[in-house]
Length: 440
Image (cartoon, rainbow, N blue to C red; front, side, top):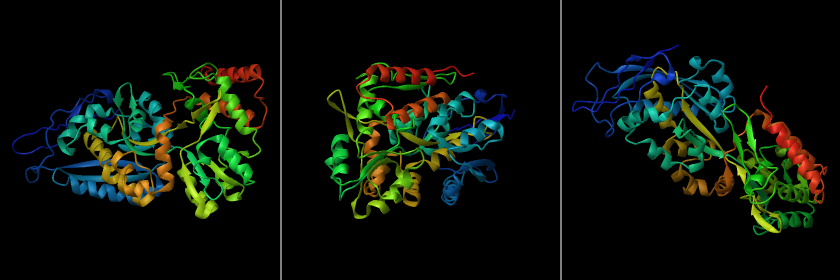
């Protein structure tokens, strides 16, 4: 295995310098950095600067932006080291699979989707940032507590396992909400599924949503107080066939009533953009990736808001959602873990999250950026931010997806009847049994 170097952050009257000192042979042997204090103001003695080599991975479409962030990082810390930072291409969606192929060969700093965190931590592929807080304090002039306070609580939760922070929140735009055509559907109509479907029927249009996906259909159960969870062995806990604030049967009855409306369109997973462009919809549940398509289809009526409430046992219940985040972590085998932590912090700080939004319209997790005029004026991002109050960080294992997709498809196709409580309960039990099956 690669050996680690300590990231020694020592405040002295002369200067604060980074030291490379070999230590143990296992990732978790990397000691907690010492020191703290203010951001350094004095440069190391002439000729004393080391050369720090790092690699960083990011999405292909972000390469130019990321290179600019690397350049500003080098300028920020130019007094303390010379940097050789290589930027590579790797999508956040596939980061886990690539990293786990060979953790030691992976980048020092890499971005990934929040649902990959548990597997990456369990495989020993991420350094605990708690162990690198000293470096952050000494050189960035802030603490991990400051980082947590600066970002949406959901994004911090998504970056945390067993009480330790393993990544910096980078964005909070991987969720869904309601797009609607305000020339056909009023803001008041969009508040509940009942009024939304009535307005669509009146306009001879449809309201679209994907039911055959455990990412989308979980929104009804999460809103009604149900949960999913990920066990250490990769299996999933799920309680949808039981009782939370309501019974699982009651939630399914609500979904059946929505799906049976002549104004509802069940959309296959991955086909939402095509259906928006088809012109039949006056409203649709989707995310920021469909903003352009929705704007083109709805024209001057282009609008978006949080998801509607739905009727359960005669009461209005706010539909939940899955809140997905993009995170940036430090490889547990990094030879320069402290500098890697500072680089990861830099590319996810307030300034650079504002740059991400300005250049790529990436929804920020940083609270100040999210509250900025530029973000709140963006129709899709503002709707996502509104829905985020009802979002859940979805934790589920690999066996979650097929049974929940099949179950949602049964509802969308009318294979379950609202007055057949026994049939609904049996279908729920079958779905849960499939989701919780042991990994072979």
